[in-house]
Structures are given as C-alpha cells and as structure tokens.
Image (cartoon, rainbow, N blue to C red; front, side, top):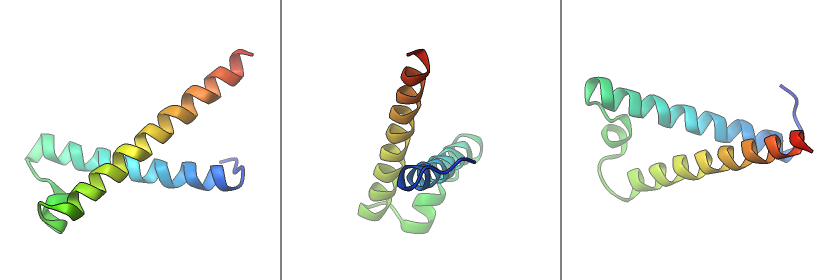
Length: 73
C-alpha cells in the first residue's frame, strides 16, 4: 500500500472503520446480532460509533471520486 502521509493513514483508518461497520451490518442481517449495541448498549455511545462509521464511509466515497476525477484528466 502506497502511503501519502496523513491522507494515507487517514484512508487506512477510514477503511478499517468501514470494514468493521460492514461486518457489523452483515451480522445484523444474517444473525440479528448487533455487536455495537451488544457491547455499548443502545444509546449515545452506540450512536457515536454509527456516526463515525458513516463519516468514514463518506470520506472513502469522496476520496474515491476525487481519485477517479484525477485519472480522467
């Protein structure tokens, strides 16, 4: 993996967070098991985790679109 300083590290962290979120949703769909709620309960802490996963996903989407835009030029 080619690191480009802070953006490379931030991208890796975002990838890991999105991966964990995707695995959690897979468990919810397959087994009705929500690990976030199981570990943190239903409340503010769980909501913060969901927000962090969503922001990480948006970051990855923006970075992917910017990368594709650069390749076209």
